[in-house]
Amino acid sequence: MQRTRPASVHAIEIALSIAVLLVALVMSTDAPVGFPTRPAVGDVPLDPELLVPGLLGLASLGYSIRRGLGIVSVLIGLLGAVTVALAAVSLHTLYSGSAAGVFGGGLLTLSVGIPLALFVLGVGAVDLLRRGDVGSG
Image 1 (spheres, rainbow, N blue to C red):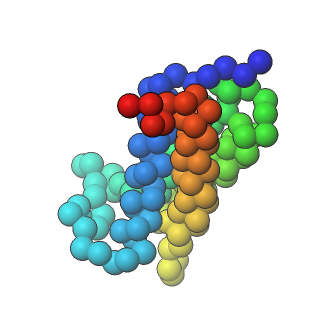
Image 2: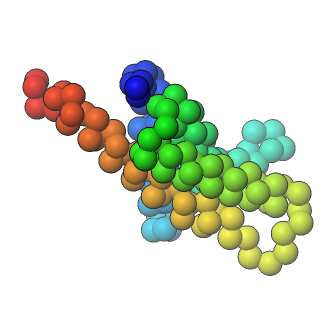
Image 3: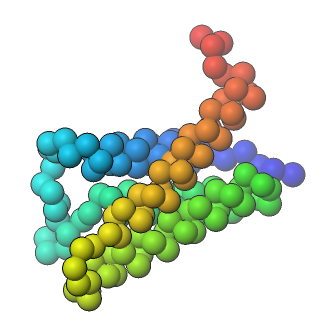
């Protein structure tokens, strides 16, 4: 029996999915951004192209664990695990100083985070349609 996810978890997943797509849009268009190119908290740099997809991956792993065994939860769980792994390896590579040359970790993390975000948004839309919440104003 599949359990429904709490509204707060769903809202976090949707917000992170939209944030991933916005980060990808900003990074791909070279639009002027309102935040520093390398935002930081103290001495720790925070890269949105690594952190936002990583957080979405963590939220998606939580979703798949709560949802139970099913095709959708397994696919979301796999995409989430790959996204978290890429974000963790990229963060380690970036902050340990072992990277030489051009760093492509943000591109790799976003390349998995974008399909994950689209899949999470699609599943959320299908859930809304099944419940009949859309258009019942």
